Length: 226
Image 1 (tube, helix red, strand yellow):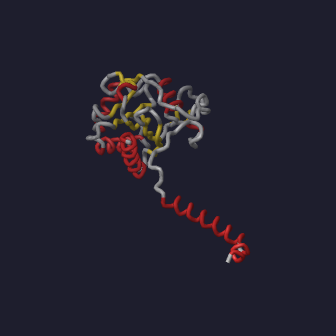
Image 2 (spheres, helix red, strand yellow; image 1 turned 60 degrees about the vertical axis):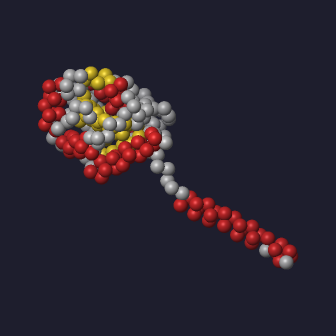
Image 3 (cartoon, one colour; image 1 turned 30 degrees about the horizontal axis):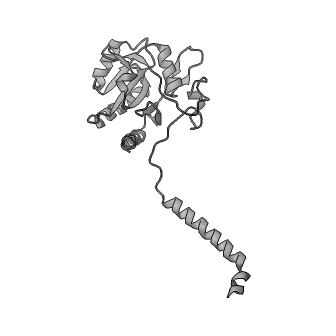
């Protein structure tokens, strides 16, 4: 018997290795995928570099949304403290836009309705045309779109600050050549966690992305409870 096993020693080794590989592959296939959303940094995640300011493209980790000081539709100063310990959804728009903005705003209004009883989640929309979108203009727009003040801030402010937020923090918009501190309008909608980290990109004009965003908010809330 011993001579029989020795004779086929190489075959047994090969079979043992193959069995181990098969077991490993089956285990990997059956193992649940990590439910956590990725933490998105300027470098290493695959973000289109055209959306990121050159000064932060090298950052591999610990990227967070910068402090900000903007004014909402009621003339109230809004800062990062208003979003402290909150998950929030951010986007960029302007009130006179007739192309993608109405769709994006309708989808944000849909999120507002879906999340109306969820005190952990807020919305934040930045105008990219602060020279047009005054507080009064934002207020008219907010009333027309059914914005709930406690849930959703439409904010205006310094064009430079909004530009820097879009390019250096949210990594959401391309430069507009020939227009200093001008942005090419973006459909990108962003999901921010309670630690001010970017956790997801979504096309604000697509219903399927809105649905995915709602699912990802649930994932973040479960993550916070772990």
